[in-house]
Length: 574
Image 1 (tube, rainbow, N blue to C red):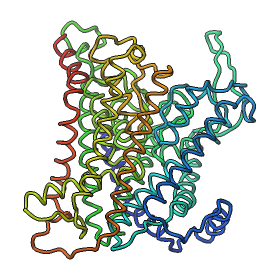
Image 2 (cartoon, rainbow, N blue to C red; image 1 turned 30 degrees about the vertical axis):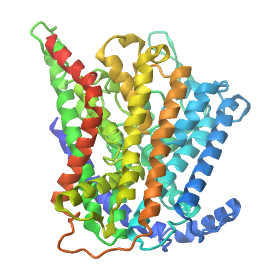
Image 3 (cartoon, helix red, strand yellow; image 1 turned 120 degrees about the vertical axis):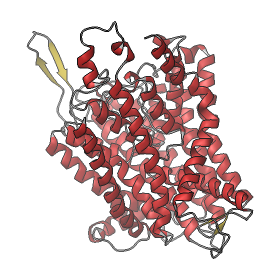
Image 4 (cartoon, rainbow, N blue to C red; image 1 turned 90 degrees about the vertical axis):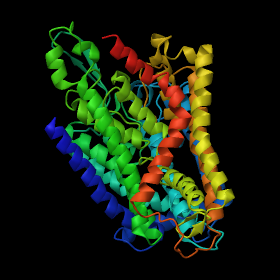
């Protein structure tokens, strides 16, 4: 246990150091400055612009930027859908897997385009190698680049004064892929292969077991998908077991590295924000808020999972209770990792929108499952998706400074930009999109036959509501992790979850872009004696309070009937 805690501390410390360096690096990339990769990548960058036919120096307003973003998304969704439907006619399919059924192909295309990577299928028995590395990995790069690009737009909107343009989407996307996502993914994939992950295009291997049984060992180009899965906070695994599979996550070192890599860019963007606006402490404040909530969440989950199941603590427990207590709640967990490392991984991937798991979410204690659910419901801002975590946090910061302005009786300001009614309305709309989607779709699922058919094994229990709430929270939050008790590969869930994914990504993004378009036009007002400071502990506390109050008022009634009720019922039974 002590070693696990030390490993967690070292992982968080490494994230802090890595975020500092990559944050400054991203400033140079998106400002188009020359960096050490320029000699190799600039020719590729120029050729790419010629191929797609764009002028990278031509800047766009927020509407044109958004249209470009949506156009590449829609085209890539159509491409992915076609590849999945006709994968049986395409190469790199040694197992002769059939084409993916239409509802599942639709859900999967939307899922990967929105950075959700929700998987209503087992990758090793559903997707060909071509589908995995072309259709799905393509989206893992594109969706991550889109999120980061919008974060850069918001940063430019705050840093610039009296302008109408916010950059060029095509330049931001291309630079993000060539200078950030691709090089780091290549290096990380090599590290994974060296650590025991696999990367090949072989047919599956059939072996005879010691008990005279026959087992098929699935394999394929795993490490390359694993790298961008974590770096881009995508989460879609090559195997159904995701990061619990030893081919994806071979040992304790890779477990810590995967946690590190999924937290790196989301925290790094806070440093990018601070350096770009010329006030690093502003970025550190946002990062501190993210870190405090995330580490607190890890502490609660680790404590709960280490306690174990009350059924085994009770006086009438079986003889194995003592050894079980020593290891905590080991149900659904890899013996290689245990409760604390699983808690660290699961909070990191639900605090971000990665959604990758190294243990079964459905096997966690009720409170252990509640915390990841709450992290998603906060809006995935602790630290959130690559990109959307930062711009989601800025949305809450706008609301927080508005509240502060009301308290001090002044027009609220954020980094010299006056926050007016229109900005607050855009922020409020963005925040309201999430509960509208989560609670609206969950209500439809609870009240309809198709929705109730998903968690069939838990009918009539609080856990049924938890599974449904988690599914639509994960979809809306573009997380992709799931409680395994819900069978999502039905027409109802394939289409409803796809709707929640789209709403969570783009209905949230549109008011954010509109807010950026409004902020970039404003001049910067010098700070005065009456300006509320946003670079110190007081604002950290205010921002945390705003986030928690908004989430509590919105979601407490729902979670009180799910995981909280389940927790008290479990205690009462023993």
